[in-house]
Image (cartoon, rainbow, N blue to C red; front, side, top):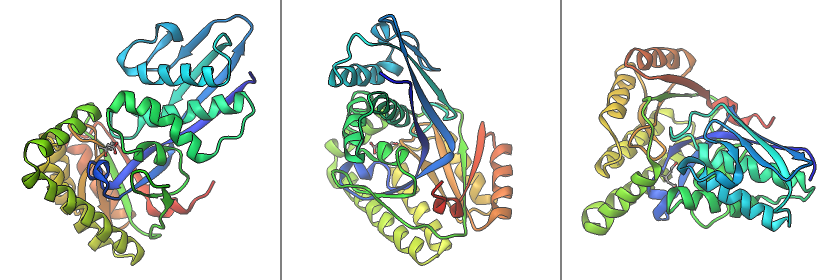
Length: 316
Ligand code: MEV
């Protein structure tokens, strides 16, 4: 084993969460200013030690719910490389707020797989990376679409359909997303299960909401291609209405969404699984984004970030 490190980014789902689990498309973007790094350092003894905000201690004892999925992934990787007895220190340093719909678990898995392949000097095709990250995501989230892992490992915004190779989608050079945290942990597994339960119990009522989100994603893609920020904002609002009808919005998310709209957002919605976590608001330019960010802070957001669409073309 060599000393190695892997990197990944926060992800923001622009539109399409939940419906993507049922085969509809989604659009998501990596936020490269919010990073996660996993560093592996070989040890001469056989100790396998983890240092992260979720878990601190030996891999063998990593049975805590937050780290169990990554621990399982790590054991599978060590078996794959025939290195079950290899000693190492694994340090995970993350700017991502955990459980806020920013893809913290997928970003951790992505960086760990990258570090491990680099440590054994084996090239890592993207499709192989996504197969590995699915292992921990499945354990943590039950029925993941793969969108989070595809986006946290990407360099540019992604058009994603489950079971298909993701591909980059161009964004306009103007427009800013304001991202705000409710300060309440999101619950991906519970939210995905709640939508599944509703669909199971009353498909006639809930399936049209999934279809409507898919339709809003396709319209959003057209708006992005045509540089039509107002039209894009309307589709974000359509998606939010459907997500609320699916039962995954919360009063805290609704409160921030209303505050953003009152401050001039072109559209606003929750992002990620909902039931807590973050929301996004679309601003026509940087000045409008500042006003919305301030309104969100005043409305009680625990953290606010901005993402200029112009950043999406940055390949660095
Ligand atoms: C969670 O970030 C996104 C969901 O659509 C679940 C998934 O795609 O696996 C809610």
